Image 1 (tube, rainbow, N blue to C red):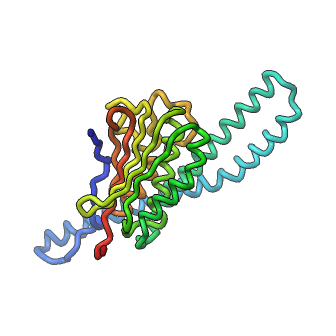
Image 2: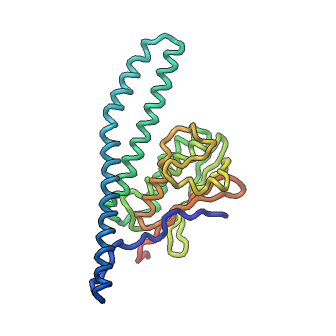
Length: 268
């Protein structure tokens, strides 16, 4: 199986500051300049994230008003071009709403304010698979699960649930009726591995590295509903939880996504 490595290194890097203020004066001055630069970069990134979060939040209210107005107008229009245009405008407004929600969620995840907590990962996987069951049945897609018992880890709150939501949402959109999606969770060499595989059409080799990027989407799926941020958010949640997300080809066809998280120490 071929896997692509996320664009970020794993495990997460340590603090960007140079520690231990010792050594020759030249080295101490260099260390001070480096730390000043690191603080400036961190401050700039934080301000960018704050702006994205604030802008996304502030735009949601006028967008909700616009959607409401379009919905109120639609019943009063006669069938024809005008009504069709209003319907298309509603679709675009809802797509913009999904985009704003995605940007806001990504900014919140990247802020890194949440603390890691010990969680029952086996229960989290089973709960999300059960929650998505009706969606897959309605779409005519078989959803199965093989989850090991006693899988635990220290991750962001509801990390596995949020990541699985993104992966299963993608599968429900892109796997055709009659297809099959399988979720497996097991312990492998001290790592909790959750794999979601399908037997859909998959993506070409050159598009695999783009799937975890923001707004990454294959050329054949440009008109599929969604913000294009789901997998990017899942990748960030995995990274901040001390893990990684990887995508590759499923055999004999389809897509496979693997989430790897460090096992909680002291497992009995």
